[in-house]
Amino acid sequence: MTEQRLLLATTNRGKVRELKKLLRGLPLKIESLDRYPEFGKCRETGKTFEKNSRGKCLYYSRKYPGLVLAEDSGLEVEALGGQPGVYSARFSGPGANDQKNIKKLLKLMAAVPGDRRWASFVCVASLGSQGRIIKTFRGRVRGLILTEPDGHNGFGYDPVFYYPPLKKSFARLRPEEKNRVSHRGRALKKVRLFLESYLKKK
Image (cartoon, rainbow, N blue to C red):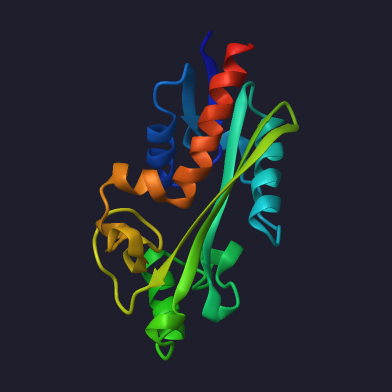
């Protein structure tokens, strides 16, 4: 297998760290968008994770001379009708950040009882090259929304997402623990298996 280049189509450093760990050992030179400011920013206008994921993948694969991996992910809270969904990163409006998004979520969930606080993290990852989608992969994990943040690892909504099988919030899991069970970890396992086969043919 000869080494190929793979662009991670995100500037989110937390995501970049996770993705690099999940793809470690593959014969790929992995880069992120931080190295290519000239590519500009793809506007996310899709109403689903899949549309945003595929849209970003197509946009950057027309500019980058190698493979592109784009993912869109977020939190779907059952008591909120699936919110924040594709708006997870910008849930609290202009100037949104993790703390503001969590604060808004907890305020909206304040009156929701424990047995109705179910939510899912969802990830859709798209692999593409030269303006075409090669394959799309999905991952999902279900848990409960806590009443206050717990833990300091991870990013995004991890501090308020409680995972019952491990009896911990995602923000209390070590990176390797989280990658084994998370939505992104589950999607990227499928990406990795596909790439192992795909790269052998190149």
